[in-house]
Image 1 (cartoon, one colour):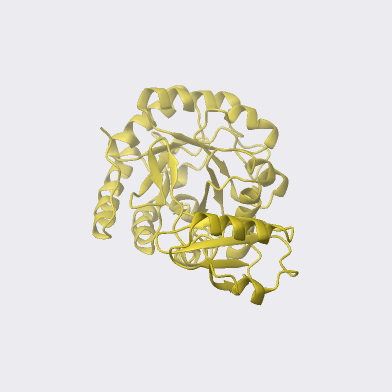
Image 2: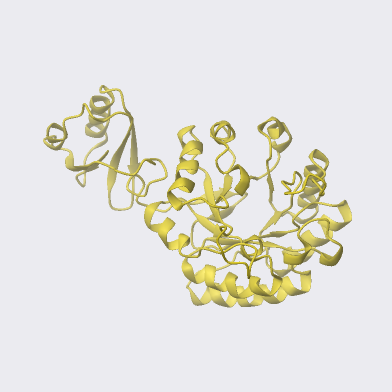
Length: 340
């Protein structure tokens, strides 16, 4: 349920109304937007008399929210959420470019890629330390050592880092990681999501291989219900009957999410397609669809990569892609952050 307040209502009236509403055993959150102030109620609201609430002098109207997700719902939070990551804004007018190798293989590899992607315009460095692989015999990542190498690359370049968590028991190794990624296979690992809800770090939540948008938002709700509102959604393609690409990139999800939720959403064209030459056109399409950023895989030697070399751009290819991305972003009236 949401309670929309009249314009110009004082703080004392709002506080009194909140106390009254919480007496019914629900949690009330006051959200102040540019033009509207609302009180979002989470919990069992069946005992609340809507007509009685409407009769309050401070109340404009009352609406029941049908969707099962509340914290992630735009009805509860009309303005876009903007998440600060080391001074970068995800969800505002800036478009953030996350780039780097699928997996961290060595200090030389990750530092070289970090330098090259930063020079081309990337703002955040990605790299897998713990890698979920379909085959138990494939390279599983360097683990905690991989995070240390990412931190070394951050120290050298200044790029914030993002890496994927595979097991909540590994959370202790993520103390200095700037964004924690929850991969597609863990999108419905609800115990992990609940634990990450107690963290104060931004969480990038990838869409599951065959999950609906509402299921995706409900997973975000698990994190937010724990108190962590710093959730970034990432569309990375879903599994369909099509075999021309690794997955099917659902770009319609971007405007749908923007309508349903206030959370920022980025697009990963690398995992979505698995094909390098498709990364550039789908990056442009993602920006036009309203995405707040891109996640692109870049490797200094894709042919010999230990993971997903077929979808990884070379630094030279990434540089050319960024020229196109920059033009598209500027055409849309937004901008890429400039490194000083």
